[in-house]
Length: 226
Image (tube, rainbow, N blue to C red; front, top):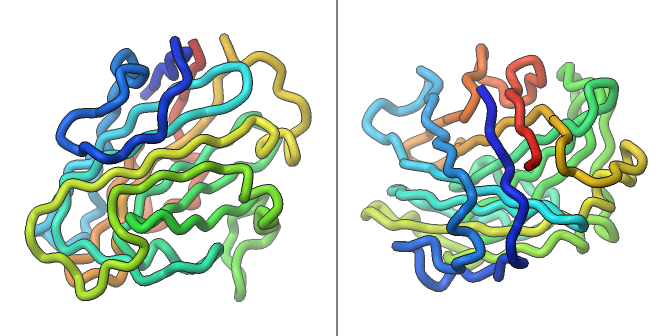
């Protein structure tokens, strides 16, 4: 699998006021990928349609998720909270094969959880080798979201929601060193949709994962920067 990250022709506005179209014309030439490989542990009656667009320029990477969903919930409001238990979308990106990856997990209310993970083997309290992205660095990530920060009680009816964000390259460079121009680079990555503690739990990936575990860099696929 491979996803082509188009070079932005204009800086995308982080605009989530209209979820029926993809809003800002700056996004229109971005390729669309589908997060459609559901783990069998997911509730069989709920298959949210999750689409992603990604762009880049000399300074940042821009990511947009659009989810046609039901059973939407958002109660985690603190940075580094367990946002995967809410209605959540995630991007894991590994810039270099000899370095770790960063996870950007964001619930529908716009709350972020982000770490730099070098060894994802599970141990009590987290992973064998990882560090949380500090708040000073996470504050550089700009997030826009169409749902309110708290969605409780859960929305059982059909609803479309969006999350857009901008990740400065400096966030990655803090861990892997200078990246230079992205054009022509190839990274490994995966995109996910989950809702661990919603009434209809589900786990979906762009590149299929072999276990119910998103922290499997061996299951990441290629993203190439135009």
